[in-house]
Structure formats: C-alpha cells, structure tokens
Image (tube, rainbow, N blue to C red):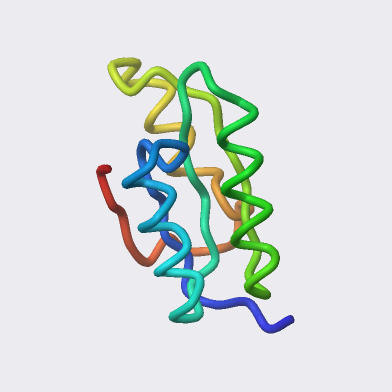
Length: 89
C-alpha cells in the first residue's frame, strides 16, 4: 500500500465522523481519527478504513485538552509524516 494523504478526523468514531473517514478513505486518504470514550466504535471505523485499502489509527483524546490535541497533531501518522487535512466531525 502506498501512503496516501493523511487526514485527522476529530470525532471520527461517531456516525458522521465515521462516514467522513470512509469517504476520505475511498478517495485515497489515510486516516487518524480521534475518540473520547468509545474505543470499540473507533476500532470499527479503523477496520472499515483498512478494508478500503488505507491506513488507519485511533487516538483517544479529550478535545478540550489543548496539550493532548497538539501532541496528537504532531504524532499522528508517524513523526516524519505530514498531516494534510483536518476534519472536525
């Protein structure tokens, strides 16, 4: 699999966020998604993205945690990989 553009989808474990993740994956994007409490839903969305041939990772975070959000932005997709898009779902 060739790495695609990387999108961070905040709230990607919810119904709308999950649909956004899948639509982006269908368009060739790799996905880093955030979730707060529902790890099972986040992993299900990651699996849907992977089934579409794209990379996916779930990051547990409280979006009001400014330091945590900054760290997620810096490290999602790996240290050397640029973040190409952000969606707040």
